[in-house]
Amino acid sequence: MTLKLHDYGVSIGRKAIVRNVRIEARAGEVLAVMGPNGAGKSTFMKGLCALRPASGRATIDKTDLLSVKPALRSRLVGYVAQDVSHLTVQLSVFELLLLAQNGGRHSWRATHDSFRLAEETLEMLGLSHFANSHPAWLSGGERQMISLALALVRKPRLLLLDEPTSALDLANQLQMLDAVLAYTRQHQIVTLAILHDMNLATRYADSTLVLAGGAMHSFGATRDILTPAMIAAVYGVDCRTVDVENGQFTAIYPLSVIASGPTRARDSLPS
Ligand SMILES: Nc1ncnc2c1ncn2[C@@H]1O[C@H](COP(=O)(O)OP(=O)(O)OP(=O)(O)O)[C@@H](O)[C@H]1O
Ligand SMILES: [Mg+2]
Image (tube, rainbow, N blue to C red; front, side, top):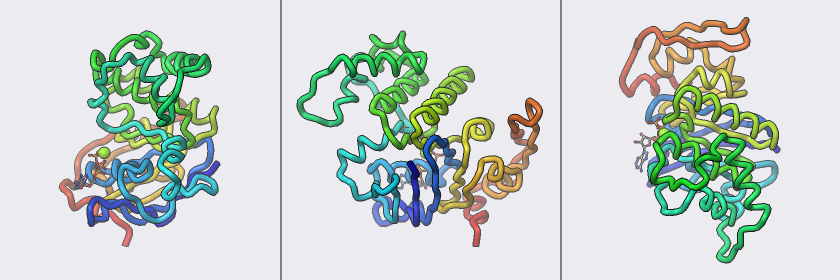
């Protein structure tokens, strides 16, 4: 399976928020989407799951995501939003995991298989102890983890995660992204994850797309993209890289802000 975006863009009203994105990702790959606040990352993602109108081409193999029927698109694409505070319905986590599998059908009965998949999904994410909790009773971070379970239980081919670790403690950040990476490899899906933490991106993402001012600044293998030069140009931050574990990982250490304000991202766009 291959995901390809070509001349992909997303508008809000008549304003083009994201323009001219051209990327490719293969089955089993995790792709980080990075860029400053307001760069268009969430809007980019919402265009792929039909929450915003998108233009250009976005294909999964031969399927054109932007023109398939909504029911098929929602089967193919799993999405975890940046803000999960709305997840407060009066159902238990387990009931929600069963409902999430009904694929929008009006009439549906939970089967032995759907119970098993709900159980396995919670177990894989280390969340079994939340099965009988109501999301409204959970903390922000716990809700964020349950939102991932709700996306995975529907077996998406393309998984979209908008800042999935923003509310998580250090151990849960690693556990969640370990699980996402393992799931992506094992089920040969494509995962796009918006991340602000560069060290998580260098550790988990095979490739990285950088958006700046709504346009594609750069795209490629993460180690080639997340360089001090890119970070200075796009974020206006001076940083150093440090090899960890004999070069197995590269850590990025920010030293100081060298340029700030909304112009830095626009200035850094390729001419
Ligand atoms: N509903 C809306 N109406 C008008 N403009 C919007 C709307 N939503 C977002 N925008 C604008 O689109 C631009 C990109 O927003 P987006 O939420 O995609 O940024 P982002 O890269 O996800 O930022 P962050 O890192 O802060 O989450 C911003 O300038 C924002 O003001
Ligand atoms: Mg966002």
